[in-house]
Image 1: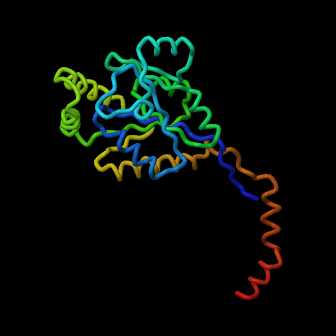
Image 2: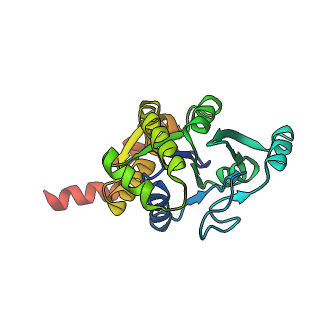
Image 3: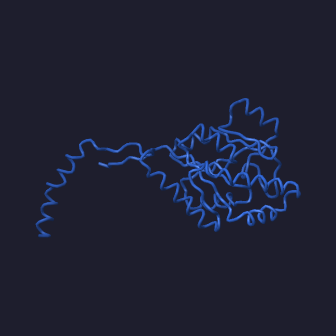
Length: 226
């Protein structure tokens, strides 16, 4: 009999980090490593950037549509970031978790705090840049926003880094491969935590051990060794 039975339901994994930390790149590599992961796609009222596609990076909706969906209780959480709405639809998440699939939420810190209040046993991982200098370089390197927006993003990133203590783990993204491997190891290790185990079978364990000790094959093996 198997002594330990893990929970059949998947774990909710919340990943955040400041703009420019490379969390999206790390998550994409993580999805290649671990096939038991599902990336929840958030909805946002912001405009599409560059090569983004609707339904890939985000589902893009208008502010009016977003407000209506808030009233309809569609979202697990939602937040306002840089004057735009971001929200996590909950139906698909619950479906995947019930299938035993771990679900990744890539969300802002405001949303992560709300999720922690609702689901305190979720796993919270913060992706950290190697330095503020490198972070500034990445933000400027995007070349998708005005100088004012860049300054606003950098100030916001500085504030977000100071919120890292609200998370269970911090992973520095010095190299994408290493960072993704660390996150993957954390996800696997969490499944071994005692409070995430469904049941430990101890009933009749003494009888089973006794039967093993007096098993005929075991006794024959003992004589052969002797």
